Length: 349
Ligand code: SF4
Image (cartoon, rainbow, N blue to C red; front, top):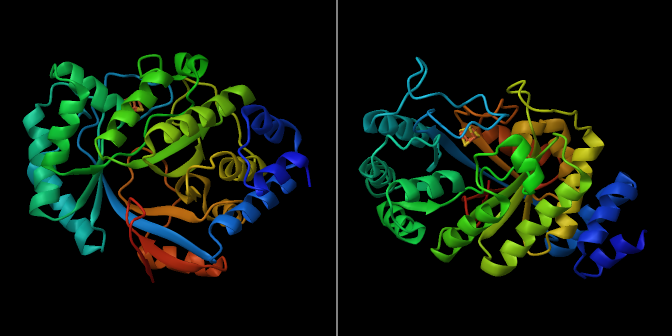
């Protein structure tokens, strides 16, 4: 086995140069084997977890204009919407009926919506309906704090008190300045994205992190991204999991390249080996599909993320029900565990 992979399997921290060498020069079969071996060292039980949630996009209005996004709408467009509290309630109740007690609550960045709307929605979902709410990407939090002229810390406290339970590490894509300028120049810089996530972690709002790749990022951009996540995790420790997926052809406004299956599996394994301070590595069945997802469970991943009720942003290839998730995991050769968003509770199912 390559000495860098041996180093990872001895529990030694890999450097960015090691990660670059793995990504560029070590055959994917070796990397994947090391990724799975490391997973079994850290999580020896042959168990794979999943969860369930309903995505509620409270608005599709957004002024950030990321090049790869087809979800955004201008405020005056015919398709623009802001959900009423009644609509939010009815979506949440439908989710409960299907056995999902968790909500992912995300926009658009729409500064025309009052702060009180957010507080009411969170109160409704969490305090009235008893659901865990994971919500808001760093750009929403940052822009809203600016718009309402309050320190981010104060906004997070308000949202948390109203019912926000955790945050998705959304909108990271590739955390390198050159890629952010190309893909989403009006989104947060890489540094600011990390800063906002750090503030969330300090406020007790844990969550996940991800990488979205498959544009014209370089290998160095990918390693820069992984290093930024690992460094932030060392500092504030709130990333419970990490998931990699690829850009989809939602618009023609950015460069999109094909991600081969072996490249995706190598990425999963690299994440397992390099992100030594993040316990759970997820396979993105939602975007990558079940065939690759199954192989990712033998490349370092120990979780299949979620079945999602109502996906508006990504073109879903995901599993449609709790039973489908259980069947998928068991067919892949693992025991299935139902978990919550934050990986605090696991029950065999
Ligand atoms: S990706 Fe998010 S922030 Fe960017 S334009 Fe789309 S909705 Fe707005």
